Structure formats: C-alpha cells, structure tokens
Length: 288
Image (cartoon, helix red, strand yellow):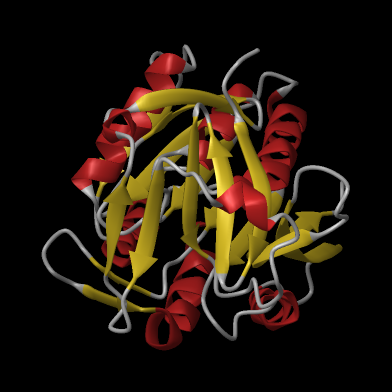
C-alpha cells in the first residue's frame, strides 16, 4: 500500500494526522470540539506547537521525520518535509479542487487548443500539477525560491518535468502588471493568497489591503473565453460567500455558476466529522 495522508482525529484546537509512515499533531484553530479517539494521541512522531505570538516549534520524537519523504494524495505524488512554520508542503483540503482543475483543464485542452492557466501564490505546486495533468499550459508564480524549487521536485516525481509549466519566482502583483503589458491572457486563474507575505524584493502583501486591487488587475489578463476562476483562502473573514461576493464584482455580467464551499478534510473512521480548513469559491463559465 502506498504511503498517503489521513486525518485520524481532531479536537482541542489541534489535528492528529497520519502523513505517510509518521503520526503528527499540528494546530487547527477550527477544531473547537473534543477529540473522539484520545488514545490515538498518546504516541506521535512529531508535534508542532504554536506560540501566542504566531511562531511555533516542532517537538520531534522520531528523527526520521526530518528527512523529506513522498506520499500519494489526490492523484499526485508529493514530497513532504517539516518546515519552521509547521507546514508540510501539503494542503489536503485542496484535494477536490485539484480534481476539478484537472477536469476543467482537460475539457479546455481536449481539442488541441492552448489552455493557459495561471496559478498565483502557488506554493509547492499541487494545483499547477493538477492543471498540467489535465493538459493545460501553466504559469506557476510564487515569491519564495524555496517553494518554487519544491514545486519543481513535485513535478519531477509526477513525471511532469517536461510539461509546459513556467516556474516563476516573482512578486505576484508585479508579475500580473507585466502580464497586462504583454497582453498575455489566461483561460483559468487559481488564486490562493496568504493573509500576509513578502515579495521577492521585500514587497509586503496584506490580504485585507491588496486582494481587491489584485482582483481588479486580473481582469486585464482574463481571456474573453476564459473557463474558470478559483479563489481560496485560509484567512479569517474570507468565507465562501464573502469570496463569492468578491468574484461577483469582478465577473459581473459573465454567464456562469458559482460554487462557494467550505474546504473540508474528513476524519478517518466512522466519526462522521469533517475539519473545516479554509474556504474556496469557484466561478465556472457557461459553455457557449
């Protein structure tokens, strides 16, 4: 059996995860309930504890977890690695989005037409790789050299090293401004902005200050026959309906449908619980 990801349990503002061969505890502010299987939490390989100021620290019980390893999840092979921020290079709540990206990219490219997809704040590349698997030509943009290098490793292990993906270490806002000047257009846009970030030259990103401006700029690179726009977020206040309202202002008059959803990760077993893990809103253009 291939190594994969499972959410074993959640509660007391944390989540218990099986990530490949390792059992891990990480923070989860949405897990306001009690764990359903407390005995499972007694022996773990690593525990990331977040401090009041927002920083955190790993408590490592199994030193093997410090080495990068691969798992299979959501139709992708992904390199997993512990980071100083508590991230692992995987956001399992995006699994359903990856499948929809694949399907829409396949539909858009099946007639042999170029189907250009732009992935902004692209991190370790799950959405970029899903689009490439569907046949899209992808622009993958992130300000972090480390994240872009990690995404390229993920492309290699998925046999996508020769896929038409542009790997771009760049400030998202400056990149979009240049694409407007180049008159480069995209039929699919994927946007997963952080609450706070820094560009390649120290530019500051704050979602509450800059998201509306960025969305307005993206109008300038949307293809007249674009297929989809996906906006997702893990920031407080950016609920599915809030983001639908943002996209509604951007896409006023365009015929299509919204899919505004809470991103969830279902627990293993028969608890019937799902852990809320951010929000996403799709706009899918009606076929002409």
